[in-house]
Image 1 (tube, helix red, strand yellow):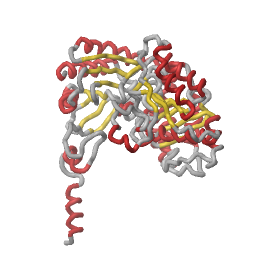
Image 2: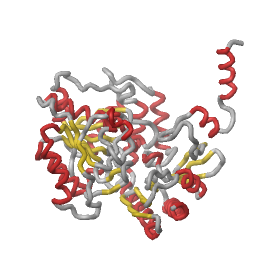
Image 3: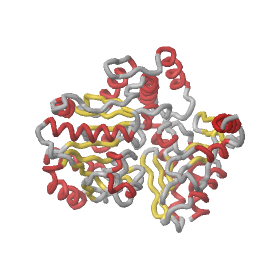
Image 4: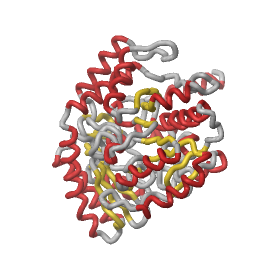
Length: 441
């Protein structure tokens, strides 16, 4: 037997045998995790409704919607059927020079439900890619309009926009997770994060630092990019809609594009269909993802106005220079159509309001804990902010033992449950979060 044969034989002997977590640790590298140090890890056998069933038989109430995407829960019959039906036609076909019904229908739907000026839809692979596409659109737009010097972006601190290079460059450079790559990234402009909370008034003083920075650099700024109303992974902060409305006014006044990163909160998560709806504004470019397919497949979309599309097309290239291999994937498009239609045909506002009320009531006792700095809720988002970072090696197994799946990070023990979660399950979820924080902080 040759060395190659022996290696192949050894490999065959390993595959499919032994404990799932042990096998995982030998070959898999998980997100935001070390490849050498062990961290809590749990095998999942199945998922249905709002519950995950682990390989050891335990059932967990899912408080994360699989990173905020599975808004309808798991194994929804409508989405399952959409996938099966589309598989009978085609699972994929390239989008260069070809088109198909699921993608066109999805683009038509997105144009119909987003703010009116957004008329063009670029379908892509993931949220980070949607941000990359938005940034490239903005830069190419200004080249097409005769201002190639406009190459910088202005954003706000505590923001998060993804893990690819362009997206990392507009995440918080100090408090974010990408400072290790600072020498690789372009230098953009960072205004202070809004200090007026969601339910607080917004004054000129609140907006002044942002306006001062924009005024100084408007001649070189291509676009402002931010998460509307809810800053997600960077902070889980909720800021005043009036602040966002003022930013729209300032972008118009200084002739700068506005990019709204709606990936985390789009499709009802904040209590409105889109974060921009809280302020009654329309961006020039909007990024969508996560809940777009109800958590079934990775897909995202970047929408823009006809003016942006024309500027990009008038650039020397004569075309937008981006083209993902799986752009407009028919299977993902079909499921996205089913997911969006399912959401819009459901009493989603009432469901989100019910979940929100349950989160407020259930998380309220955490405010009295000495280790807690703040408790806040907006729509189907609930946050316990601790005074010190939580120990994931301790709190994660404890939450599982308490019967829930919640994935904290830093000082944030938060939940974004499926919209279809019943009040009793919300109570189980919040009770476990409060108990876990009480026992570990």
